[in-house]
Image (cartoon, rainbow, N blue to C red; front, side, top):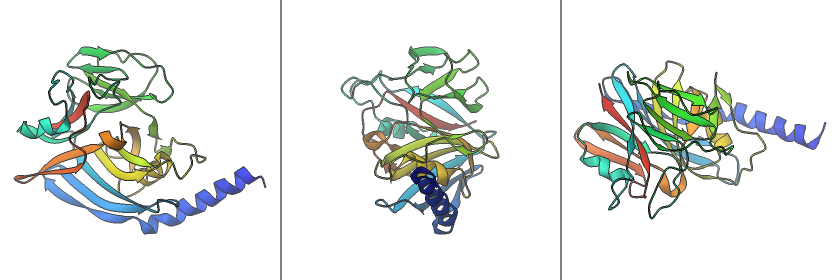
Length: 255
């Protein structure tokens, strides 16, 4: 047995056993929307990762991509706190500059393109929202068609259809950052995800299993950009940074 094969077997045994070490629960926020708070085990040296996720029924809620770059005074997620229609929001994809943030990959808002496609391997997926507000995650091949009224290129695809880990098992365990992601679960519900420091491979392995159950998931900008906000009754809750300079955000509104 080669060293590589031995390492893969060790990783498989680790992930097969670690399901018992996932902790947390879903709590209803309102009809068709719930929040998950919990943690999961990680390979050393990180060991434990905290996660918050907002899950919504697409028949009751819709996503939209918002261009924050037009507000040069404060292009941050916190701006959305004043939008009474927004019930949840998460940071968008990578930016070219924090001084004057522009999307580093393709972005389209209400049918108008903000930026061009990025050919880099990192930008392997596109979040697509059609005119009816239905969300899908597609692989990057070319500029999305007009059916994607809102679109956001990002990546990598950390969970690929139909629920497989899209990240190599050889990703170093030390490559941990705070993460943001969007996924569709087995019931086609949309899930917004934010975590403390984790590798993409460990995150993907957790997301594709219960209690989240993603069949496809796309990574968004992380680290200092990673932020999530949502409304819980009369209170506005936040997790991570909501004051980083962003080019785009993904916002949830009730239908």
